[in-house]
Length: 148
Image (cartoon, rainbow, N blue to C red; front, top):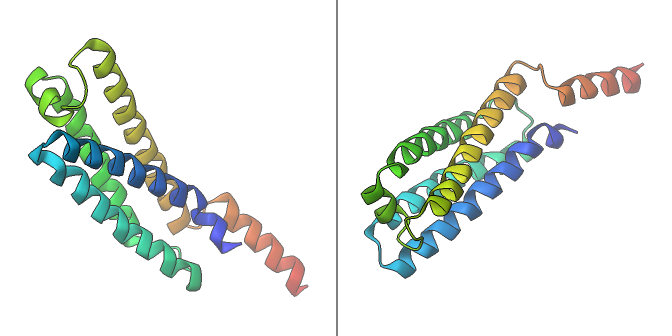
């Protein structure tokens, strides 16, 4: 049951990891030197994944690396949104896309979704840390029934 407390966080971590993998591969195929951005983000996500694996064995409500990871992802997405408005930055960050309105809308949609998901995960981590999440309340109810 403790596993479910972090389920959304695991799914969002996987989504961010594979989104950055796609961006990394696209940058490498384009010959861009900016491949270090998604590579760095992927490494940061791996620290969070490692912590999530540890949490499977040791039930805790403190996920320090995961919180730090999603704060960094939130900041990175905000920075990428601001850089994406500049035509020269957009072309350097996404050389595999044509610098058109449709491409910019697509990229901004993905980045804004990333910002929202990071915010949701950070809020969920706050709830878990303070034992205010729904899953914890279910666990408490279950334990009361089992121990009565």
